[in-house]
Length: 256
Ligand code: NAP
Image (tube, rainbow, N blue to C red):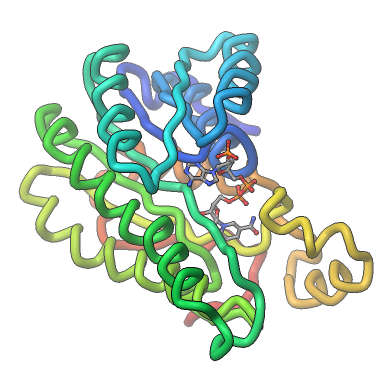
């Protein structure tokens, strides 16, 4: 990957759900571009492994457990980042779940609640927790990880798609308010990226071939394909961009 060493020098970033997949690639890229990065996810072993991997690459990272759905975990994530690195400049809200796959009308209330609690409510509450600290720096950047499904509902993933549409609205609603503190809020909307989350697609040849036919660039994305966009949105290269979203889909149609 073409990293830009130094672009984020002196910056401190929090990336949620960053022990594998897209979040891990983002954490690595922000680190390669000079940021100090706090890595987190639910499982201690995953955190240890991810931190060790990136420390071996000489990146300045720390890690801790944070289940984004837990109030104390979110508070601790912000508190420990300040304790360890002294500040927060960048927040990447990447965690999401999808406990339901099927016709929308058959979803159970608790499945709906889980999707919205983790994907939308926790994303907002973490922003709320981090914003006063980012504001102290005089400027900063928040990036919410949505999905192409937030623009064009994907079959059997209706409620998940609605939660990702909500993140587009969340960024639009927060951007003008936080512009007063010189904090920008933007969205990364990945297409179909090869991670554990999308395993059902790439472990089945038939499904994989059907899916790839819908991607003009003729392949699923890799987590690293998303990371440079987040680094751009975190950096001064995008300093006049807020309330926007960038689709990283290999050309899948989502909007004009
Ligand atoms: P992934 O490879 O399955 O990685 C999931 C990560 O999330 C792991 O580090 C996991 O670690 C952590 N995690 C899960 N639940 C969590 C929670 N409640 N709190 C904190 N961490 C949690 O997933 P991914 O594909 O990279 O997805 C990342 C983001 O991209 C999600 O927002 C997803 O909706 C979005 N996205 C993905 C695709 C795709 O095709 N893959 C497409 C569009 C958008 P632990 O198990 O240790 O918690």
